[in-house]
Length: 174
Image (cartoon, rainbow, N blue to C red; front, side, top):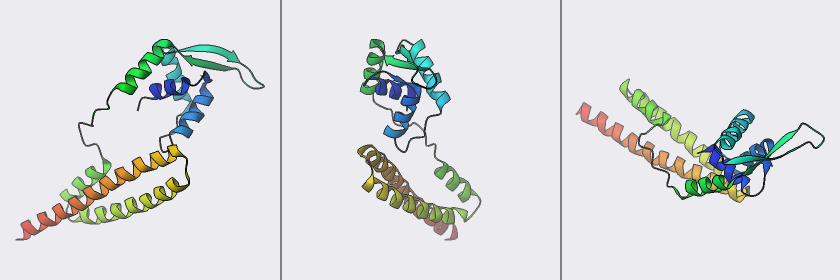
């Protein structure tokens, strides 16, 4: 995910200050890692440097001075380009799950037990997400659906891995 592009999308509605952008990011992208304030301000500086955002005003409303940023025409063009581009599928498997199973299978029978424990953890998380989805906002429901489907894919892989490991054991004992 491009934090800068998400922030540009949030600026389309109206100019906003950094604290507001952080709060909206964290609210509108449930399930995403919350942004650190330092990341928000560093991203705003890059967007400004690249001509995608500009300072609209500086306000002080009973607290610290806040810089309000607005999206520029170049920023709108960049946001449209980003939204129109397709996210390429990941070229490599970079999963902790796969790494643990490969290492566990290399040292003996530990992989089966790990896979069974992982399956139980995935099922428990799916139940939690299903409950959250039922009472959440549309954004929370979309995030939960995404996470549930990824967990479901992992569960299918876990079942395949268990069968493959069982076949391997059978062929080495035969």
